[in-house]
Image (cartoon, rainbow, N blue to C red):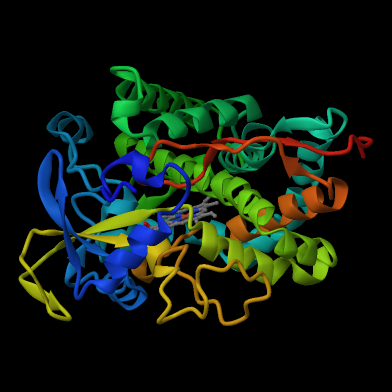
Length: 400
Ligand code: HEM
């Protein structure tokens, strides 16, 4: 068993439940070495993760939420511009306000009908074949459609951007040299094209509204827009995809649970979806940095030290969840932390839930016998958990 939280191998078959257990069982936070950095405190218990996520006075999202500090070249290229995910209040509050209204529960609900149509179309595209790669052909399609529609860009571009995010989330050592930088550059170039297009032809979409919005009495700079764009493509892309494909993998491994859900999809989907979120926890971690010398339980944390919250570990903490290693789709007390918490709690959570429901409902109703034909290949990432590809078969059916 790999016990290195900085190695993608540790996450190469899903969340490392045994390692998480061993870490949670140690007192306090656990110090972890880093190959190219000073090391960090790993928080794996629910109470600690919850506390850190809700305390931005002590634990900052700056300079980054990734374990590695930003490369100096990247920082210089961005000047003063920062991604909202890596800001603290009050600056963060102003930026979040710019797009908050697009992501409220009523705003998400208003998109529900359209999401169901998209799910129908996605399943139509594979149903006659009797087999497909569930990750690329089904789970990945929904967030690509959604981001394209939100931003007012062509669907094929949404797919392309989504492929770029996958590269950006991969561990650098698993990519050909320069591939990560090239993907970031392509993404920036694409966003620059969107700026030009939406300024020339404003439309009823989030990209146009962002370009016209004001923060602190001024418009966003091009770089700020670019980072917003990147955040939305990034945050809403492989998270939702991995929940769907990681969810199907979990259901495949627990046939009794799969059968329970299929027996009454409309009645059981809500609790099942929350349990899949807990169990799959697509975001492995978020980092914070201590703003001051401070203490969590018996652990003394020095100003400037990194503190990393492991959401999948917190979501399996037996002091918070009964029988946490078991996928229990009927679980009712399920205050999981898959969407994080505090000031940065996932802005897209209402939309994500509807996307998940739309796809699962369509798949389980129209392909009830869906099954994996091989063990999935897992993403090589220490940040985002989920299968990279997953071949499935099902009885072919008609397009609707
Ligand atoms: C299953 C799907 C998803 C999961 C598991 C997920 C998870 C997360 C997590 C863990 C965070 C960080 C929270 C924290 O630091 O406490 C986050 C932030 C965020 N998510 Fe999601 N997310 C999902 C889907 C989406 C979607 C569909 C969108 C939008 C289209 C979205 C947009 C965002 C944004 C904008 C942030 C940054 C919020 C901020 O900094 O204030 N997410 N998400």
